[in-house]
Length: 217
Image 1: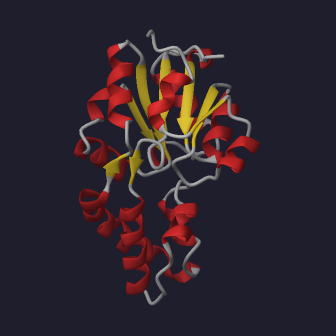
Image 2: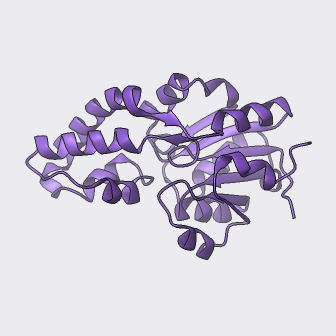
């Protein structure tokens, strides 16, 4: 059964964009600069999605958090420009949804310092009616505040929205906001984890999003 919606809200990392290499480069740069050992891609990928402060805090001692985070953020602005890329089919699905009259938004735990520039860099900023990041609200995902705020800003009811994300926290945020959720398996959470969180729909790649709800075709 396909979902009905007027507003599609997207997570960023692992859903629309692949910035894992950029994150890995910045994490390991900041760790080694502050006297820590580099960590593997797999470890970093599993930690992405909760915001950069929580990402770094899980890898360093408390006394080194602020200096390491500062180094991470400075490096990450450059790393994103070099390594961030769209996931296959992402731009095409955004173009299709926009063309067919859907409102589109972003709800990300990634700070706005990085989210807005990467959207412009990858030439997809124009598709979104609203972009809201964790540093713009009091509570990041899995709290529903990001999604509820977007609904309010765009004058939409929860029944008119669908949230698309790659992590358990995305499914939880959507459910807590009372909106339908689509989980995509291209990010930080495993299929088994996503399925256990009980999203309304699971897809293996973002290009399959039109299979989840009616796009007018």
